[in-house]
Length: 401
Image (cartoon, rainbow, N blue to C red; front, side, top):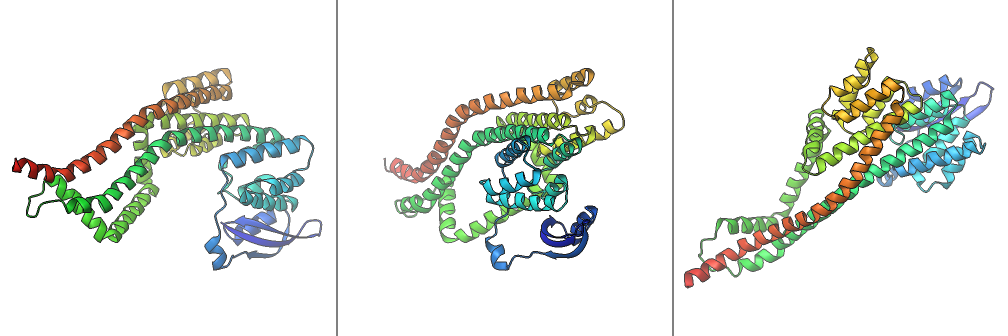
């Protein structure tokens, strides 16, 4: 996506200037002509190489977007026009990058572009869920209600992400600490011990391994750095490949302790998103595809996409979802009951509530379980290295006796 400055003549004969983010000049021109404007000039705004060096990509968290949606809904409810509301929020938002984009959206809306098109021009900020809800609200004349639903959905999603982050924060911190501790021992402690080893003694295999690692890291640390960097890049490329995404998402569901937690979080996110989309009046197939993509798990996304194709052929929602092992029987049963009673959004919300509560409970339990396990792992790692270093000394003492 690139930023383009445009100059057009509106259908009322006025000269209008503004900015629009799009893939290329053709997309900008197409959007402007759809609005009934006559295009005079379109120019890509290219920052200098020096600006690119320090330019940070704009990011907006779920918390930022939830607050933006709720504030915009409140201003619209108070009777403030949409353009004025957007300009006001662009100034007062704490996220300066988001504020700049909201200002550009406001200028495009002021120039005649509808709100949905203005928002969808920034897909790296506003997801398909966000633009879909905005479109449904704008077409149905219920933009304020759609924004409130969006704010609630984003807030719930933020809670889920925070729960997962808190569950993984402690083991990640201990793991990083362990790596630095072992590296410190290899760089500084092992050379001291090597000086105590008697000349000509045959070192045990564990000691040879520790000494080799220490000497190799101290003499060729740059080779280790390059090797680790290449491994990480290869792993990253693998994760971005189609095969890698499938296998990694499948592995994540099978990780002891964390797998069930992640699975519940994904199901909760899918159920909450689908409920929000149904409640906002989004068509069934479009809602399913958007909810599947919002989970961030390719296994769920593909299962939902297959279900959407079968729903398009005239089948129910619950049946195709039940054919995938990704969805627990409780989910498909509740959806089936919802289809029979005409209360699918309400039952999906109950499913989301249930799994969100389970995520919260499991997170607290995991924190208590992981702490002693990680301490044991750190103790074993350090103890094994120290034992390997003391083995030659013990051997000399034993032989002397």
